[in-house]
Length: 369
Image (cartoon, rainbow, N blue to C red; front, side, top):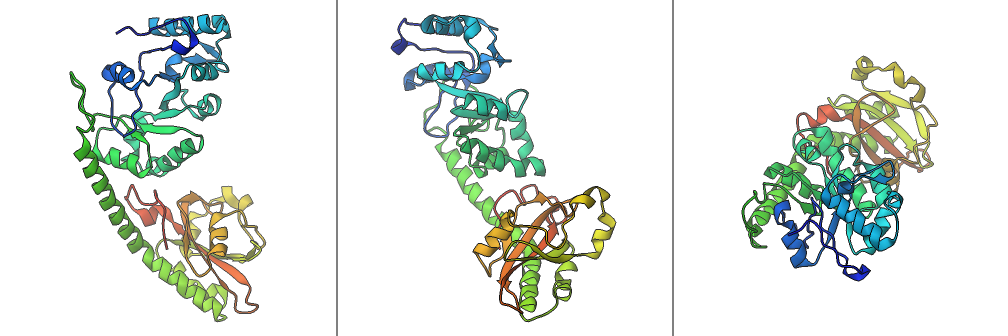
């Protein structure tokens, strides 16, 4: 089959390029050597935006397939090749009935700038990112957010380079739409039936449910002492105990860093109460942004969620707080103050690294109190 085919007339225009992929309605992997046949059978024609090699606004012609595409496109549109810039290409390929696909996202020039400029239909995550998410805690925590952002940009997300069940489970947990890799089907001389890996996907989803249940148990077990201490502190505050005394039990727990009170207006009441172990972690670089009495916390989600759902513990995902140089998780709880019955929010920052230990997955998903 030729790399390209061209029939004069806009309605009959069809292109095939090196690296073209077919998009199926189910998460089945299709290898590149078969994709032309699948594309013909499904009537789906996809152009990989990265294959067009758009650099500094101009499309480079680096292969016979690329030259054929741009030559045909120029013929149809009546434009010269120098006018086929990155601003024109997306609208042009869409008008041909094609999808825009960005390959190797997260590597080289394939970044969010391309997402904003090209507005792709499909984004393929680079295999190096896929490899990292299964073994590196930071990559694992960021992975779900990256895929979520791509979804918000209006793209279908394909995770490529999946070689193991662990990598496949990471893609499932991150809500990826499509998956690709040798784990599903190594290369062969012929296409497999569409349902050839039905059992594999069933086993994968069953394993994912088991992993989620086990993770929730681990998270609950590690957080339980802190949740109990926070609720006891809230009860003491509601009965009139002074703030420094009410939070002493929390601050003696090994992962606790600090506690602070926020009023219903979002303004901090008094200073932070720090744990003794924080003294050794002092970092002067953060002095200028240290929270003090009157600091406004209205923009923080853990404050807003606590106000919206009083008498229920809210738990953040890991983040770097301006209060200290380490990643933390914040527990927050809204209650009625003893003196004027106004609503206040008690917050406790926990040292995330100590809490998670060596657990790669801990903190990657949503946490519940």
